[in-house]
Picture 1 (tube, rainbow, N blue to C red):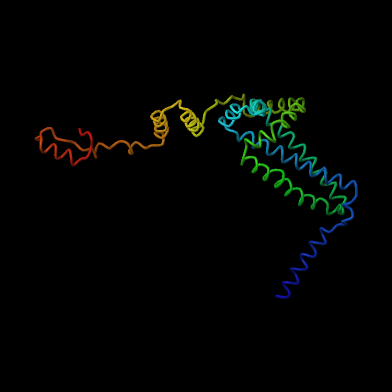
Picture 2 (picture 1 turned 90 degrees about the horizontal axis):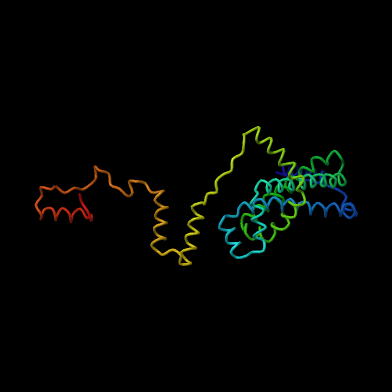
Length: 267
């Protein structure tokens, strides 16, 4: 047991010595500037990653609600989503640029702290978790949890300005991407805008509360949509299990049989 503990301590001491660096280097002006820059680049990466998730998580009902409420960011969000390809290209371009800049900046920081032989490995060990957690998973999770608030308060205006800023780059990237797409899959087709069932039901509830639909009409719509998932055996009786009355029966016997069947109508 003592030998195992000894090897365990030795292992972690070697790991600590491998990652050890001169803390005084962190107080240098150039290092401070690069650390601040790194934090800004990671924040930009998180912004672009979460922007895509937030905007494309908005339902049609969310967009209609924003417009009815006259939200200041409503028209900007509609303008962004009206051209989804332009939006995706702009977001991905920004995300790739800041991720590359972040990786290069972090590599410079690591080289300043460690020997060149260690720098490559340590840079990967630092950047992969940073980009994955701070640049992708965490911001996307936050955005999908509340896409409306995230889109209106954080995303809309800055992303609109970014798209305007990189318009020439966006045109070039889109032109190249369109040619490649045409060569691989042929001419692109525009998908029809289809209202999802849950969105339609939510819309029905809203207009019912406003008095546009009465209770009977609301129930009829719900039953009509539910019928699509109902199997025929749930609403109809197989012929072999149907109850019949013989026309040759006398009236008392027919009445007794009818009462026993417990159906409102009997063939």
